[in-house]
Image (cartoon, rainbow, N blue to C red; front, top):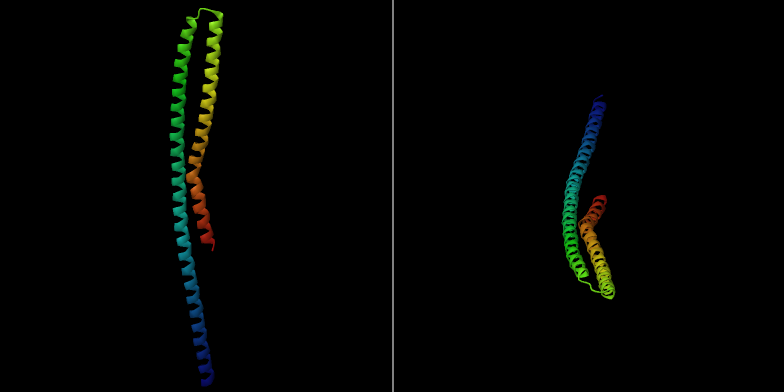
Amino acid sequence: MTDAMETAKTYAEEAKARFQGAFSEFNDKTKQAVEKSSRAFEELSELAKGNLEALVESGQIAAKGVETLGQDAAEYGRKSFEKTSATLKSFAAVKSPAEFFQLQSELLSSVFDTVASESARSSETMLKLAGDIAKPISNRVSVVSDKIKSLAA
């Protein structure tokens, strides 16, 4: 009977040791998973913060660009008004139909050239502004893509 007790005691101690080993291994793996998840969460929080900063930067660039475009448009309008006013005054001094048509032709030619030039300049400015607005967001997309790849690995 003593042998049976000793065998049972040995078996119980071995089972206890295996159970403690398995539980310890489970604890270690759980702790590692929690640490990894915590690091991933911190990194994702940093990514979100960076994304928000990129959106704010893009918004600031857009606001400044729209302000500049508005100022440019107002300046163009002012110059156009002054030029048109001066031309209309010169119409009052016209002495012959030939002189009138010559002045009108010069005015239309000048207006057409100015509008074409201003349209090209505005288009170029808008394209540059769009690129400037997209740049911070594009940079963040690259950072986020790299970070997600590293987290998935």
